[in-house]
Image: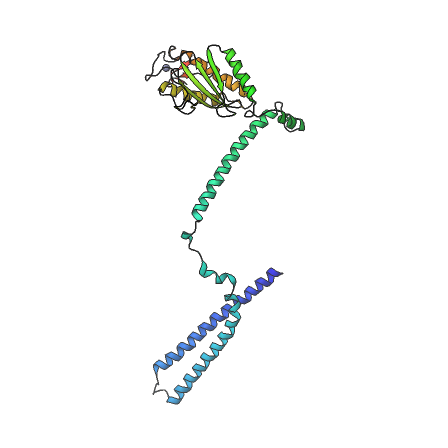
Length: 311
Ligand SMILES: [Zn+2]
């Protein structure tokens, strides 16, 4: 009902507006006729002065009538002209002076970041789904949920578990020196020494490998003030290359459920570098290629290859 009356009102107003425009045109034409006749002056051939004056008088009367008619209609138009929105027309903002662009940009970045984080979260949640349902169809049941709470996240493993894992590796590979420290709090820093060939530093968060760095046997992982330095790279190109390969290997061996296997696989793979300076490339049969020994070890077979010779 309200909408109908509003529509009716606006139609009425529209009609009034049309009428006002028509009356304005009528007034303009009658006024211009007065001025036109006055500017022509008295035509002696047609009649005398009195006729001319009475004609002008008639015209002026019609102007007055037209004007009063327009005035009446204009009074009805007042509510339209005083609508609240029309009063704000003069306050119309200059778009260049508003920070709309930067706000939009910020909103766009924020949305992008949210989408990115949501994607990452979905990935992690999916891993947990895998972990909590070792049997198909269990995840949907209540039993599956209960079981998932009992299993720890790979990041949230007690330090004793990590220590026993490293101790097991130490026993398994007596040719490697393995030491664990925790200068960064809960993260374990594992330092490996492979015969007289290389040193490796592995940062573990829980049982998940977060960082791998390889250096030469004569280098160390200490900064100038004697603290452990996990960031600085080896000054030898060969160990920089192996660092890159080791980072790739830690991703290759990564498994969301069997994180201990990831660490074991990486250590086993690193152990294959004990022939770094003695074994030739399995493909080209040469020791050096571009002044570098075979810096790549196959993930499955652990066979040495030059970086350019691997498949
Ligand atoms: Zn080769």
